[in-house]
Image (cartoon, rainbow, N blue to C red):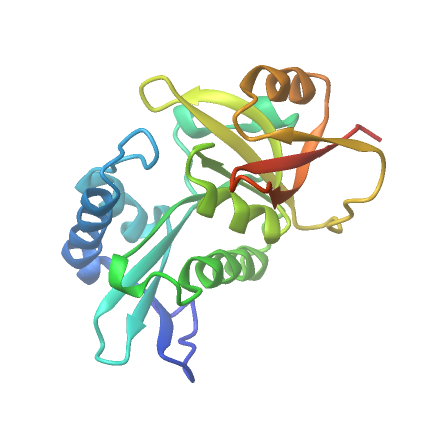
Length: 226
């Protein structure tokens, strides 16, 4: 797939993947799932899911090390089945576009290289290139690396929902036509304070920043609605 231009110049290069990469992508996905060992934190996907995406239902960005090994990928899902159509939750009308950053995986030996961050940025730029406006993602509250990087990339927590077998997930959203303003009044809330976050998001508050506490836990800054 040539839609995503290859980027090189560092220890990792990035390029769009195609249907011929299906087995390699799925093997990487399974290896990353096994390394984490927590299906409640990362949703296991089927081979058919990746086949649909690589056959035109979306885009997949691949990350390659200097030896040419695929060490990471990120999915931009363009065709959303009813179960993944978050427009009602985000206050979007049925006619508005919506795409999903539908997961990213990096092999453990390549952790710490900034690959996950880069995959988010590249998928955002691909969405812009395609003329899209509305993006969303889900992330488990316990998967801090994922939602921290999404918040840093301009996404905001708009809800806490049960997905994928009853597991809690942050619902994160970004409007590509709007700025990333985080000013205003707000309150800090621990990532483990589920009930408070449910109350805040139900009242229209958005989680837009994060920080570490002295004990190593995370908290999010929820901004009151405008």
